[in-house]
Length: 114
Length: 113
Image (cartoon, rainbow over all chains, first blue to last red; front, top):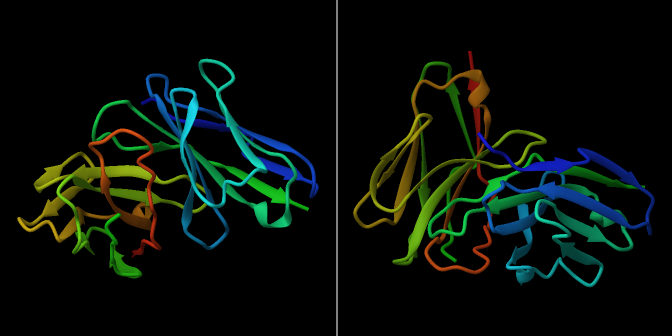
């Protein structure tokens, strides 16, 4: 069964450094998403992406965050200058471009900011 | 987005059937009901989705009454590996655009021997 893959599984970064989280969505999917989950808290929506542009973003997704689909297979989340509070699990999801299709999630990248 | 309410936790034993009920009183006409499962340090995994009546797949059944103000996820004969958090989500699956998912705290199911 096709799946969303994310790399790395764990990223440790110094505060203030830039970090790029990578995702390979399921190949025929056209909607892409990033969510995050701080330890012990809810899964929170960050951003959705379709047709090479952001469809929707949350208040969390400020100017320090950006997303890109650099080629036909990867979808990336960049945090420009990381803060301690960016420490969380980051999940990528994708879904088909058909009505009523569920989002499928990767197993996440654990981001630890020191 | 329709707000959902589900129990914070449930306990069961191996081999039992588990039913988790979710209330969504202000569900809209276009909304679908979707359930996800999440294990620690893993991403949410899609289980089942439905609009009305009953939906069944290889892992679960979803029962939705006629008024659609609630839904019940049924897990037959659970095992220890079904210990996880289960999320009920309600949203518009028809229109395009973002379709962001709004997760609640879910139901922590604990299965024991």
